[in-house]
Each structure stands twice: as C-alpha cells, then as structure tokens.
Length: 354
Length: 102
Image (cartoon, rainbow over all chains, first blue to last red; front, top):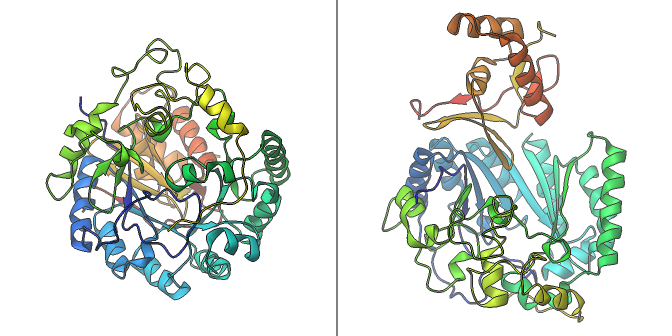
C-alpha cells in the first residue's frame, strides 16, 4: 500500500535538551552521540519531502537550538520551499539568534512553558529557563512571527491553567496549546506522579471554555483536548498511521510518529539508505498499520474505524505488549481495565529525565 | 463586498505541489479542493473580488454560480485566518511559490 502524500514533516534534529521535563517523549535509553544527519543531509531530505508533497516542516527535537547549524537548516528548509516552524524550549536560543532565523525565513515559533510562574516552570523543567522563554516569546512577536505557547498539563500544574491562559494573553500569543500529557517515554515512567484527577480536568475544561467565551475570537486560539485516559474514544493518533505527517528522527529513520521507532520488529528505513518517498511509501514499518486492513476486532467492524484509526499503536504496544491490538483507551477495548486502573493510581514525586 | 481586495494573511503561505494547492498556516496545512488554489493564486492584495471572478469566468465561461462560489471560498479562508481584507492590517509575506520556481 502506498501512502497519501504527507503535508507535514516533523524533523527531530537532535535528542539533546537542556531541560529535564518528567513527561519528555525522548526514548528512555539512547546513547548521546553526534546527530546522524548534517545540515546538508537535512537539505536533501527537505527537497525530497517537498517533491513528495510536504509543505510545512516543524524543526524540533529534543531542543533544536542545541544544534549550532540550526540557521543553515532553516535556510535549507526555505530553499526547499517548506514553511519552517520552530518548536523550542526557549534556550539555548537567544532573542538575537531568533532574529537571525527570522531573517533567514523562519515563519512561526512554538515556545513551551512548564507552568505560568518562574518558580513552577523552572521546577518542573529542572532548569532555570522561564525568563529565557518569556524573552523569546516577546522577540517572536516583535519580529511579527506567529507565536504558539505550549504547556504540557498534568496533576501538578492543571490547577494553574487560568494563569497559563492569562500569560498567553499578556504575551499576545496567536495560539495556546494546552496539551494534556500523553503517556509515552518518560511520561509513562512518571505516570502515577503526573496523572490528574477527573475533578481537576473538569475544572480546567470549564476555565478554558469560560476564557474562550470571554475572548470571543480576539485572544489566543486555544486548543484543549481531554486526555485519552479520560475520554471514551481513543485519540486519532497523528490523524492515522502514515497518513498526514511524517516524522524523521535524529538517526534518520522515517516514522509515522515520535514513538513508533520504539516498537520492536518494525522495520523503518533511514534517509541515508533510501529516498524520502521510498521510506514513506514502501518501508515495512510504515505499511504495518496503514489504512484499516490490519485491524482486529472490535476496530474492524467499528463505525469509528476511519475516525480514530484504532487509536495509538504505541500505546497498545506499551500497555498490552502488542501494537496490533485496539488502543486500550477505547471503552470498546476488552483491555480497557488497564486505563481505568491507571486513572486511579496516583503517587507523588516524579523522576526527572536524564 | 465584491469590491473588496484580499491578501494572504501575514502568517499564511500558498504552496503548489504536484497533488494540488495547499494553504499553510502556522501548525496547520489545508489541501485546497477544486478551484481553491486558482482563486488564492489570484489573491494579491490589489485585485478585487469582482476582478478575480471575472478572470475565472473568462477561463471557464458559463460556469454557473461562479460568483457565489468565489464569495463563499474567500469568506471561508478569511474565517480560517488565511486571508485578510486589504483594508485590514497585514500584508503577504511568503507569497506564492510553485514547484517550477523552486
């Protein structure tokens, strides 16, 4: 089966990051090493991706600005006619460094914060970083680039969601992503420390709705989705496996999402060995869960099979040991009990990412 | 408002690929169906909605409901934040790029 042309490329330029967030989606075990792809390699990848149909590239990581050649990578994305978007924790990039990237053609920036206050944000990030983040947000607006503020939500910061919204307003953010933690990588390891209560989520949801009504389209465009652990249907992970977005990880593998490279026995191809179109269309891993033919029951006969695509393969693998099963976040999964039990399992104290 | 001029909003870009036209917004990309790409290629901050309709009418003579279709599409793109009316703040930055010009 051949995939549709993807529109979006998520370019993970590195795993390195100065922060130690307990919900990091980096793999738990990776050896620090030189990035496999040079700026020139990324340039070739961008050209091939644009030929395939990609229009937008998210430059992410890890923290992409730990790469000294980030300006050259931005330049190459522009040369390939991609819309370059930077996803950053706010450091080590400086405001002047951002101005340089804007001069080279960067169009939009997403800055993550960990909480609405310096104390809370720096504690969760494990690194003093909040002031640097705010300075970068301000420069983004001064440069007339689009600004998205992102805050990953969990039990320790959900009650401050109103303050996060107020901060986004003060910074004149164009978008605010209020992103409930997804339990992969370090977040799964720290799940009991991060798991919110149903009451917290209900309260937070009400605060967001009230803010949306108050702002009535004038403030930041807010995105808040109930976490899959607390909703009846699974999330339509990445809009379907190998369907809309392509991830390329720091070692050059073309993947359907950030996590899929962790599923054993799936063979993904690397851009060092094949062109981007072949990696996307023909690798066994990319075709393993494309479409609906792979689906077991209850997905196979479900009226939502092309709405949520059976949910998240990585979650099925992590929680049930088999990526081909229905995502247990779905109430129709025979193993939904692993989710309802995890919702109740809360313990204090998280382990920072190493 | 058929004398209104439109421009791509300052954070939007129009990309033309083999499989068709795509409107790109920060963190979002929309495939444009039908004549959507052609309409946006004509949007330059100077042409009026009427002029755009006339150009398309000359390309596809006798198309029924063309003016309504152009109006509906422009309003939809404006609501999504992809277009601004020329009397609003903002000017095109990225412009249109095509496979051929890369």
